[in-house]
Image (cartoon, rainbow, N blue to C red; front, side, top):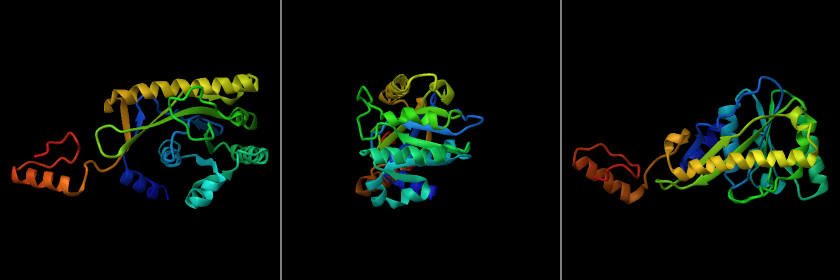
Length: 246
């Protein structure tokens, strides 16, 4: 199933890149909570690919809007569970299901903590209060912020960028009140987002590691002409935007 998402991603996007400084640590014990911003529909696919790449020894789960899960049932086959965070009942169900997931040290919970689509430049981030309650369900957990951003560089397809921030021990977070805990979580994610955005704006691939790369070029008649001219002139055809056209 992950391979299906990998093929889908590379068919529609140019690359998935992780900041060289933003690789996640792998905790020695206890469940993992990864919480992120929520800039686009692609976040669900990024979760799946990142979980498979960085946490292959963990069984990953993620809450998803119940209506969206009905529309994209395939997500339910790979660890997504439907929630309605617009209602108190939905929030209670989210915490109950999360407690079950976090009861295992080999499980990871991935949460779009804003609970809605929002621009990466939005401040404050407005994280849902429920994310601050998650450490209470598993004091031995490790909590890791994840920054996600999308942009267009040189190719036709968009680039997806991500970076993991500073990990926090669940027990340390429990020393804070819920409001202070939520403030800490928001501050750590905002810091990670700001640092990632600076790298994205640089347009320097050397600042990233490519997890996945799609097919370069425009395709169609334009690339066909470029390929033909390269052959006529005895040159290897490079379909990328920076490749020589002829």
